[in-house]
Image 1: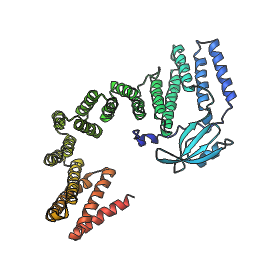
Image 2: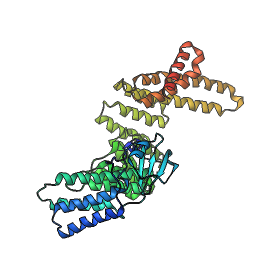
Image 3: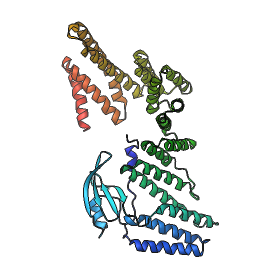
Amino acid sequence: MKRLILALSLIAVSVMASAQIKSDADIQKAIAKAEAAVAKKADNTGNWIKLGQAYLNAYNNPTANVVGGDKQQLQLVMGNDKPVSSEQVVLGNQPYEKVVYNQKNLYFDANGNLAIVEVTKPSYEGDALAKALEAYKKAAETDVKGKKTKDIAEAIRQISSNYNQDAFNAYYLGDARKASDYFALSADALLTAPVSEVDTSSIYYAGITSLEAQDYAKAEGYFKKALGYDYFSDGAVYANLYECRFAQKDTLAAREYLETGFSKFPENPQVLTNLINLYITINEDPLKLIDLLAKAKEELPGNASLYYVEGDIYAKMKDYDNAVASYRKANEIDPKYEMGFYGEGVLWYNRALEIQEEANALPYSEYKKYDALQDELKVTLKKCIEPFEKCFELTAHDAVKTNVADYLKRIYFIFRSESPENQAAYDKYNSFLEGTK
């Protein structure tokens, strides 16, 4: 499953100033000239900066004439760099047009915008960015008076940004392992003096992509590193650490990660769901989660969401009375907290589905019990209406509003013939949903 949230991937393809592509021979000459200058005078900061820039130029050269934008704009600025071929491809369930050039492949999304740049023939064999970073490290070491600190820092940031873009490109192209390496290199680059900054996001993404590549030990190392910098991703780090240890059949450590994560981030659904499932797997009493949650409520007694989480736990245990009580307690603490109403509505709807399944499983001879269950089903469905409508009224989240409208449309469809009001309610939610398409 793709774990890298797609919204993060909307980071635009790096926009570079439009320039002409140089021949690889010219690139090699520029590097050789800069290396000769360094060999001749290694204590000269300017020589190291020029060497670093020569490597950066080598890295950028295959895409020097590429700027972010749509296909038509690119054709205007790319001049004589004409495509060799093109084809339709699917990457991560998304369609792209892959346009092949001599040194690169450009991928355009369904709207014709440039989404991915893949260099197929680099102008320098090897990691030009790593070479550039080493050169700028030397530049910083020789710049004892700090006169070039700003220039060096700017170049290092660009190196980090390039690694980061390479990571996303690799991820889109289906190579999670390579993406992980690039994210780690991006973070390492920023740690380099004089920048010396911690990029916790890149460290975390390195863990996510390693996890996707099923390199569990490596992923765990990145997640632990993120924790060391107090980066929690709202508790998701603990859920991911659990996956790493559970995949390596270390149930005890996996459990410890989840319980720690739950104590710190009881609202995280990934942590909660994994912990409940783990407790079921190892035959642990799920009520222990309530005990863990009680500690969080002691520290944050006015946090309505904790009672919503408690309601979810009881609901998954099919303890419906306590679940409803918890959802309503959330609403009591904060009458504008829509998720308490949402939780109760979903609970009654799921309970109605259980009643329907029970009725459908009955033999024909038990028609009286079937009729009784159908009556119970209608009563239960009607219990959904009030909390769902309150949630619909309160929520500012489009996704929640749409989801609740879908529930209400289905419910009112069943009862629309009972009264003009029910028909009007059905029309209201149906119209709302039609307007979201």
